[in-house]
Length: 111
Image (cartoon, rainbow, N blue to C red):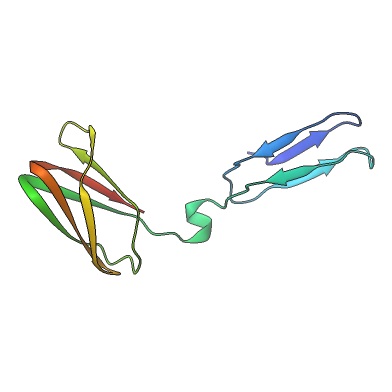
């Protein structure tokens, strides 16, 4: 797949929030102005780590050892894959606890 953007003279193009590992721009006319903002390298290119935790038995407290070396963002889904809310407490850069209002099984997605 090619990451080439071709723009002819007189055309206006705005690119925002592009998520890609590599990109190049080919300009056919020297008078064409190009502005690119919000380019984000893909996770594989930047080496960002993720972790998925599965809580198979219902519990109101999920203790997670993720070993990511950071305080990750957390998304929580119940066993029906519905997003739910819980309180996240970071123990250190490799461990966290999720407190839920009721015993629940499901998954936590950390990034």
